[in-house]
Every structure is written in C-alpha cells, then in structure tokens.
Length: 447
Image (cartoon, rainbow, N blue to C red; front, side, top):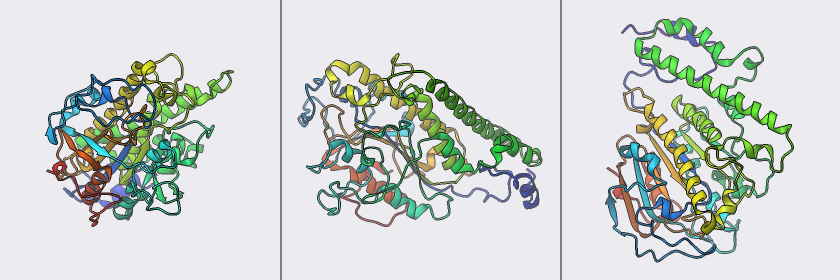
C-alpha cells in the first residue's frame, strides 16, 4: 500500500473542519498504535419494572404503592458471582450482542434522607458520595466520575468531556438536580446540550460554513484528492463515515422541520412532546459516537430523559399519543404493560448504540466498543417503589480486554455502586484506591 505524504494529506484535508476517523493509508497516523480508552454512560430515568428487567423476578408481585421497599426477594436465585445471562423481555434487545455486554446486579446506593428521591438518583448517580459527607449541599453530590476520568484522559482531546441530554422540553418543571448527571463539583453542574444542531456545531464548528453550503459537501470536495490516494478499505470507510454524517444532518433537518410544523398546531402539550423519541435518542447517540470515534473526546454522558418530569414524550411505535413515564410509574399496577414497553424501548436504543460502536474499526483492528466502557444504568432499582437497592446496570465493551463480558455478575447484597465506578476509574488509568462510598473493586468483573 502506498503511504500518503504529509503534504498530500494536508492538501486534501486542510480546508475541512470535520474530524476524520482513523485510516490506515495515512502515514501520519501511528501504524498499529493502541487506540485510547473511552468511557460513556447511557442514563435511564425513573428506574425499571423489575419483573421485566431482572432474571428470576418475572413472578414478583407488582408493587401496590410508591415508596414500598422491596428488600426480601427470596424468589430470586441469589447466586453471588458469574452466571449465564437469562434474557428477560427488557434485556432481549441485547441478546444478539451477548458476547459484548455484562449484566451487573445487586448494587446499591444509599439514600440521604431529607431530599427528593428523584433528584438524588439522577444528580448523584455518578458521584455516590457518602451520606452527609457533603456539608454544603442537601444532596450527597460531589465531582462525578466522568469529570474525574476526563481530567485524566482528556488532556489531549478538544473536549475533556461531552455532556448530552435527550430532554428537549423547555418547560423547566424541575430543578437542575433532576435533569443532569454530570457535575464539576457540589452545586456546579456540567451543563448538557439538548439540541442536536448545537451539538453538531460545537463538535464541528460549522456555523460559518453552513451559510454557504452543506458541510459534508465542502469536506468531500476539499478532500477529493486525498480520497483518490486511499486504499480500498479506507475508501470504503471514508464513504461510510461521510454518509453517516450526511444522515445525521438530514435527520436534524427532518426533526427541525417537524418541530416547526407542530408549532403551528394548537395542542395541549408542548411541541417537543410530539417529537419521535427513538429518533431523537439515536441522533444524540450518533453524535456522541462520532465524537468518541474521531478523538474529539474520550468521555461522554447521555441522559435519556429527566427524572420526575411529568411532561409527556412521544414513544413512537408504542403509543398513539405522548405519555408521561413518571406518571405511569406511580401506578405500576395499571400501566405495567406500557412501562414494560418503555423499558424495552430504552434498551433498544442502547443496543443500537452498542452495535454501532462494535461496527467501527480502530487503528489496530479492534472496534470502538472494544476500547470503550459503555454503561447503561438508572439511579432507581424500581420506578414505583423508589428503591435505591438492586440497581439495573449493564456494562458494554471489553475495555481493551480488561473486562469480562458475556455473563451476568450478581454482587453480594449491599455492594455499593461506587465499587463499579472505582473499578472503571482504575481501568481508565486513575491511580485511586477509593471513590465516594466504595468498599473495594469488582474483581470478578475483570478478566
């Protein structure tokens, strides 16, 4: 294969502002260098319906009321250690990716009495500070894991961390504690971006270019000479990458047009309630993946929706009108079927992103997923009981071979969620022996 000179590369890509993925033909890249480790989070609000998510709980009684603790679950096989994953209705979208994921159960967080349950479960999910250890706040909220890891692995990336949210509503029904999982420190939120167009412009700085023409048209024209010198595999990758960017642009345009049309119609709910939920989540996820793929950042968080926010969303393919996830969760006996559908819907979006990460090849032949810790989770173990025990957690990615995948790890009762965060932090290269209320690492999670 003919290597491409520095002059040729700069002439072909010099006018482009769009970050490029790794391509083996370009001699500027370090041949078979080890790709960087990445970390990403997919946060689901309001917990899950336990009987649909957790293996062995299908026969569990549907909770009668809110705030009823579910601690005695004797009908569950409490086998500490590794098991085969039993694919429950909510987990089934991941079944074809079973070698890429690990189900982690039995992990708890401590609720600090005196503050709202939903605010704590979102804002403190990635900090899990010991109760009453933070004196300047009613929440046990400290600098979150993603920010600490970003300090370590984000020194050479344009963005140390990237915070995204899929809450398009502007009615601000709750405080920032219900709608953010990333925090610089106590009382200092790392504000998330909710508009896909703003994410795109922040990542690719295309505001000026878009006054004249579509950014991908400009990049393709400017990089035409470079493309002619690429090898066959890289020409394929080049085309696929720019097609994915085109798709993102078209999807943004489609959603913006839909929003404009809906704004002209008189309706009870805000316009944002009618935007297709799955399309919105996948679009934000696609933008997150592009940022990770091209080295714009190594750490990202994606919050699927806000906690305790009664404004409805349009879950396309499930219901014929917008529905409020939170209001349904308060009456699980009536809405259990609908809630199970929402849980599976969210898992389908996570599975889509896991599969996409797995399809992206890195410089040494591994996939983006192989070099990423991508964690699905919620701050509640059940949306109806508001329990902080037995949280639903799935970890995707092998962390460059450091993590075991393809099984179900059940932890001893009372294992702090911070033990998982400590394990991930150390895997990402942080030299720490404690994080928040951790009591140790999850050695069984490591290969």
